[in-house]
Length: 277
DNA sequence: AAACATTCCTGCACGC
DNA sequence: TGCGTGCAGGAATGTT
Image 1 (cartoon, rainbow, N blue to C red):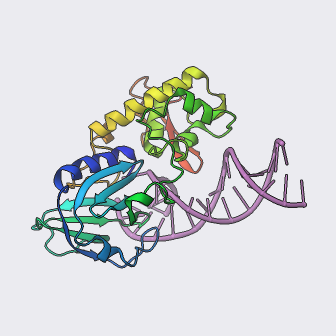
Image 2 (image 1 turned 120 degrees about the horizontal axis):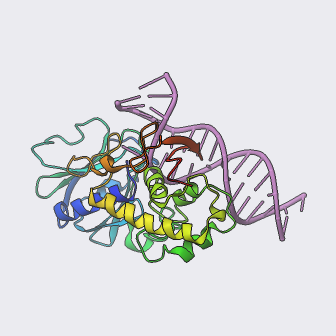
Image 3 (image 1 turned 90 degrees about the vertical axis):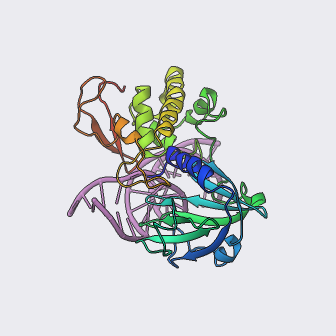
């Protein structure tokens, strides 16, 4: 599920519902995620107060008191839901629940991840930007540093497909497969075009398309393609507005041509053969 | 039953 | 030759 718009939607929802709460107890499944959970995870998070919820790329940062931060990445299939106590009386009762945080108002913040490619880690605020996960991430795609000059400098000399460049988290952080496809459709550029051979105007179109597509997707609370649900258990509604992703063989909404799918860097890449050059 | 929204690691080719 | 970099491919895993 989770690219930048989904994580940003999650951040906004949790900022309203979980901010200010104190974690009164924690239960874990004992299974390892991308890596094993820290041995001191539970004692370190219990009694902490949630002061603020932030986001960096696809990472959610749950800022706690005592200068601690819970870093959350949803991987491929993770979700973080805020459940009422009545709905989930017993901790870890659902399949693939891995972390259950009971809050002081009786609600639960539950991390669920069937494929376990995700990550939950507690770090001190000082080491947040220096630790491996966030270190080396490129600029935010909706921030001021992601502009034409920057993208052109990163594309220069590269022979790799432009779609792979957009998905390279060191170049720009937060764009995954769904939004890379949608951004390139909006920009009118084929995903397999070598990044280094894009013209200035095309770079400009990619920059403009990036903020348009991501901004719109956040407005619709992200995309539910298969199973993603937001913190309240609701799907993201941008799925209905996808122009190319998952639409192989269907008509392009703009020109009527049949949408194609070719594999690029091991990932499905959907595009309109007529609208994208 | 093949495909999959994620990251991470390996190995190969190339250039200085 | 040796090193760094860019790039492709595969692994991790459970669900649909």
